[in-house]
Image 1 (cartoon, rainbow, N blue to C red):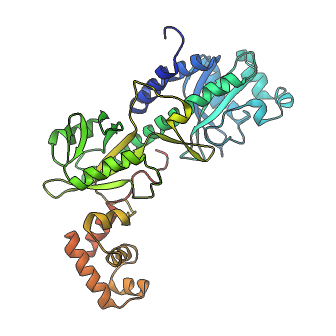
Image 2: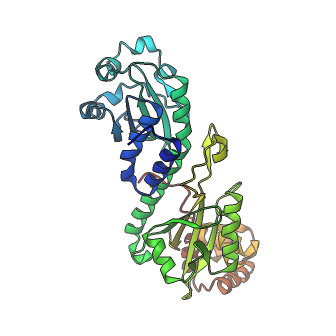
Image 3: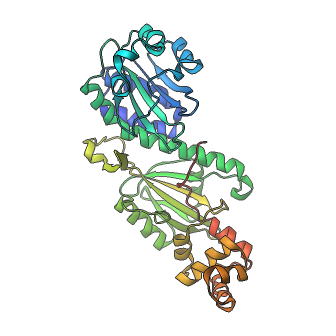
Length: 384
């Protein structure tokens, strides 16, 4: 890269990597330059086996990267990982004088001409194997300036890695559920505060080309259904504040009656020390990146969970009808539902008849698929 790396340019590169993971190779170079490190790497650390895998790095000899993976990850000072987003140096983790006599320092860090390293957890959706950033400080100790510079980029790297994980999850899901998704993955749209499309993936562009339940108008993402369109804009305006499971989702219906579910993931809030912090709190307003939310759109399919509030809103179910539907899904037939809810079987049948009428389902098995189809794909994602 030419000239000193600017924070706005680095943030732009970080968000580019959200959509193209291969760009992380350039990002780590930019991070190392911006924070003034000797070397820099992004890696996963298994807290149980103590093994470590380096995904992207710069400034380090490949021999030491391999040595870390083969053996020395078990000796590094990261036995007790810091909270998400907290930048720590080696003296924050261990007794430094004692540590300098150990194998990790003597055989791995010192031979690289380094005495200290800054570490921070960037993504921990899998708490047993979080993703960390390490910057080797060279022949000096990690100072406050390096900590502050790393802290500036942490929220953006966290969001970018979260999007990486979601895209990978949907790609894997599409492969395993190709028969229900008709070979199509989830549509993913990054939108700005005015709902203008910053980026759409291949599946998303296909949805827009069909001009069915979603379309583009003056560069904006628009839902054909007026209520869904209003819900989308309100969620973006609210920034996802106070969203509960299912409240950041809305239903879309194609002309042929096929139902799709859209979920909104705000990108303007990150977690730091257990509290939400806005982009403005970090005084970072990169002009070349304006996306504030990611909208994930997929065809409704069975995944083992239900989203009651969304089902009720989509079909106009009363609370009593929703309770019957969810009980049918959870415990089985009319007798079991009657016992579980403590109501007469005739009452269950009455509500069930209304549920069938409103949803268009004709069998209890159809209700199971219907309810499961409205599950939130943003909740409970494990490692890919």
